[in-house]
Length: 307
Image (cartoon, rainbow, N blue to C red):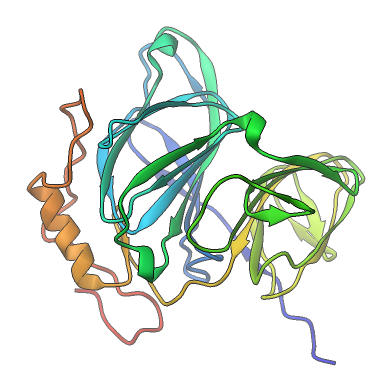
């Protein structure tokens, strides 16, 4: 019998997105670039929004990925170059497929401009399969009431994306993808089966033990490939599980662009600098390209160097 593989734990890196809006970034990390299709994982908040203090994200572009936005508290207004206007509320999944290119903004909803409230949530990026990197862009909103919820071993589980525990999320994806929201009670013992090839668990609030190993709040524990694990808690814990089939090859990730091809990243940079990627209707602001031409970091283990 082979020895069990060591558990990899990733710690967050704090990133300031501007205006004092800080996020905890778990992916990509030096020790782990992706989990399933997910190449980017940000946890923001809880952050108190007050009148006159809008952490708006001005229009900016994406290619080669899908953004996945999920709120625990608060609200955001999504607008994009397809003309979609969608208020994002807690419990819903908002899946934006960038494909060949899309531009979007995320702002404080107009009805909350004079309100004080808390924003708290996650934003992930899923790299699109190579065969679908240049698909037509799209946006899909799945309301909170349409996300399947089950109780498993005394734990409330919402199947945000993918299939688990006999239920399937209505969110459509282009690769096998798993995204679960777990509300673990105090004193829980939850056996997480190997639902897909790659899985990780992130602790939004609280600490637990995974296969007897302590995992602290705001830590991501990556399970050995093809394996599940036993989760135990002393106090109540909010956690998410992410995963899926491994990526079909390495990805270049530079600024808001993801691609299997370096030259595609450079082309996207040229297109955005020339404002050829579209515009969000009714908006004139935009986030400029950070340096032009910018450096494209090579994916790990490719033997290539940054350009």
